[in-house]
Length: 512
Image (tube, rainbow, N blue to C red):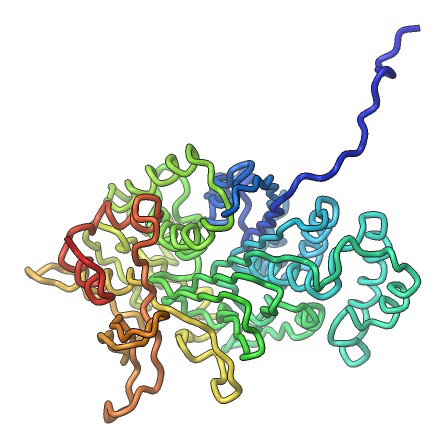
């Protein structure tokens, strides 16, 4: 009798090749695989997934396979608009997303593999939670997943007063670990998290309260997630976060990482960029369709390029995809015809934004000059008062906490480019979050012990006698000049100009 099975050969188990396991979680209402053209605008998370090579080398020449997992944001899929907003507003599905991401890690991980986590908005919270789970309990073997999920559900269902702060200390889990000494592929101490890279993590545990005319208290929903470990411990080698300088929605307060002196391992950098939340993470629906009203992802391309340069020592990029992406980005620095906001938003929203003072000023061409989304629209005016962000104000230095914040030079470039010189009808860019700050040239001691100079943003006291806060400007520097994504964008608009040469001279770089 004929058979469809070949019994002459059996595939045998072989030693695993070295892998870089890359977990990418998108923001609320964002999906790179949506058939809805307004939801399918690629975010920076999607762009990153698509640009990664299938394999890459490390500094020793060792080849690593690169395996990518992508998870669409909460509130996506074939659901109604109401259901999408309900899920997005309450964070419904977030816990499941964490489980799915951890499940992927467990099913693909072998001892010695490197883990990478990337996310935007609530997806950033998801990846931070998943990384926290790996550094808390380690990576378990696949056949224990059902038991883990059962015990995790038991833990989550407990009232906060009866729940241990960490799942690792949950009595049922502790007992299960004792009974199963072969539970782990790698312990939490052996797990190697190479990079966590996020764009604008927002909200209290991903589920903020909202409202000032009426109050929407989401504390009950937050209780479901407050046990997640989203901070950075010393098993994370590198952590990068791009932050939105112009986001004002109180419900979108940033979740800024804080390190303590005990963590001497993690290389942390959190950088402020011009733009609202969606301008930093990308994927705005205002950039969808044949007549987009947004900035066509021009601002998002800057924070994307920054992240790529940060991770280039650790992950390999596919050169063809990279070039295609940046050819498109280079076109974004130049204006194209756009329809009016009325056509896209509807008359009521447009009229309200006019009353609320939303700007329709047309900016000059160039890098860092894309339109900033007015995030505080009518709906959010109803839901909560504007709350400007406070760079440098998200940690307690008296406790030794530090955040390693930086201000990206695109902030200064945007200010210079929008300063009217010949009676133009645009206003100088003045982010409300930086009101009262001044950019100065300051001295510092370099790693070689020599005194050097660099750009610093300072918020003075009233008498301008003392620095209340200061943040160094991010130095792009000489990093792989011909291979830097940041330089590629800048070269398109600013290379050789006085403003860019001044930025470089301030850092002591030789300008030909």
